Image (cartoon, rainbow, N blue to C red; front, side):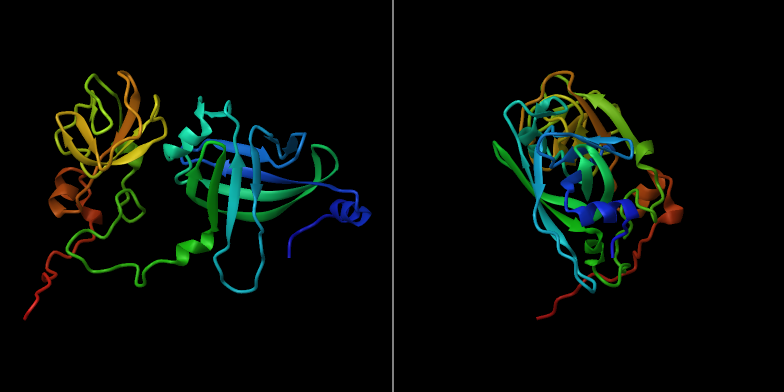
Length: 282
């Protein structure tokens, strides 16, 4: 059952309510987009302005008794001059701009345009599978119950460390191992020649994210780091310009020597080096 107020109950009973959906999209970089499905007015609620910068709608939302992962479709209609961080919206999505984003959908009930009498929570979850096209961005959103879809038991005995770098069990702070740099001459879609000065291999199996330029928002796993060059696991979509800003995060191969000598974090390693290797007999 969803909470209500006497004022909202009275408005609903009058059957004169204006209704619009409110969308709060929290991006992985902590920026927030606040949008509304209202046709011709913005909506202000709890100090936030939900605007009509983009035309957005969602599919059916159902409620059920029991434990089930809710999944809905969200559609963003874009115009040629629509921009996010100065780039066309399809390009932003193509650069993985919505990867790791979360969405909150609420329904606002108003007696006059833009001023809700009450707002009802409809859905909250993570965005996945964004598909850009020239005029339409389609994506799915799954409720947080999807986090229950994981292997049991969670902790497995393996020869390599079973922590995920920077998770709670690893305990390291990602910011301490994140370094800013710029792209230099010779950078291509297949490799960024950077001014980063860390030793060879420091960023191998880490990540690199583009902050500015044609690839702004794009993120890749680093396959190889040699002499300041970052080779991505797969190519970037667009060429680089000298001076494009990047940030790179150190990588870990989950071996004890790396945890000890590189990260000084051996106290938190979860490794079982005595596990025998698989043997196949004919």
